[in-house]
Length: 300
Image (cartoon, rainbow, N blue to C red):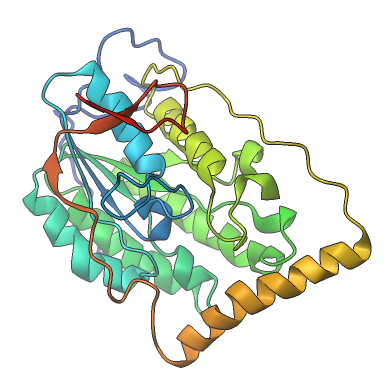
């Protein structure tokens, strides 16, 4: 990827979690520096797979969980989530970047390109070019920017064939993050979630356990103290070969075929969906903190 046309943002006088002041190797007993968090992306950031009836879109997700923790540590915290399921990187950049900047955030999460990577024939370098253009814009005002690597798909036969593309995508993300002083939330290295028990029945989206672990990882990456505890999934059931193949057929009929048909029809699961939190507003958390299944609202 050519770098000679790029502009490095020199502003160092900002509240940003760098490796020097807010890293996993440095104890930060005080409150975090952020007051306005805006999350951009697709179904991963929207929270698909982590149902929460009280949420505007019916889902909670890792970004909501992170915002809940951040909101407890400062008095004037606000959070917006612009992510919409099914979106490609070009759609995310076109529909969410300017909207995010208008909200004047000092903390931004940007996850995009995953839906592009798993489409046959796409080029991870071209995806990276679009990603880099978005990062340049998102870093304009000096906000802390968190970006994500893709998960290592070697554990799942369905997506194992994309492992090489994901690895190239990840290397590009790391290079962009290094160039623009972004924070990398490393899904590839998060071995805990490389387990089908952390995923929904569609085998694509994290379930509540998965979103919980991603939230813990993001908070560790930001070096924000928190009380979130590891969640242990139930043991995998013992299945016969025939039962496993029957499950595969049900998955293909229920999830794979509709996905293929949407591609053929140039449709998206997010075509009629709007952002669940288009404005930066105070956070409603779930209580008690350590019980992800709790549904009692608590305004903070």
